[in-house]
Length: 112
Image 1 (cartoon, rainbow, N blue to C red):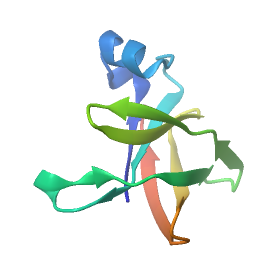
Image 2: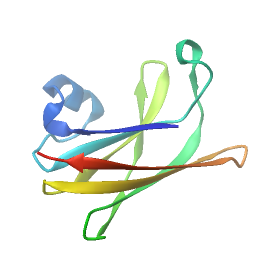
Image 3: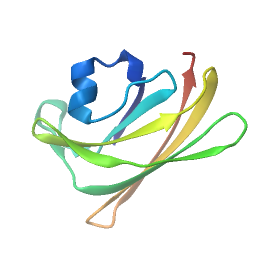
Image 4: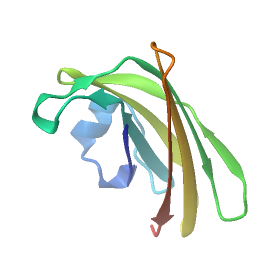
């Protein structure tokens, strides 16, 4: 499982339109990919993905994720709305059809 967070204002208008998301100074895009295989031969793994973000005050932000096709792969994306500067701690879980659960935790400093 891989995850990244980017400010939506850093996305091009074309990318925002393709992902069907609203760009804005408080909107940050969480993108999660569940994959198997080597980098040059990876494939998407069907999974139910959940994500939660916690800010420095401990306020919980449930991230509503939806699947989007990216070429031949599928990613799970959602928007986190936050007022910078802050630090978010993300907890992401992927449940695959073979009852495997993968959990990823990471932090991201949000400056703008």
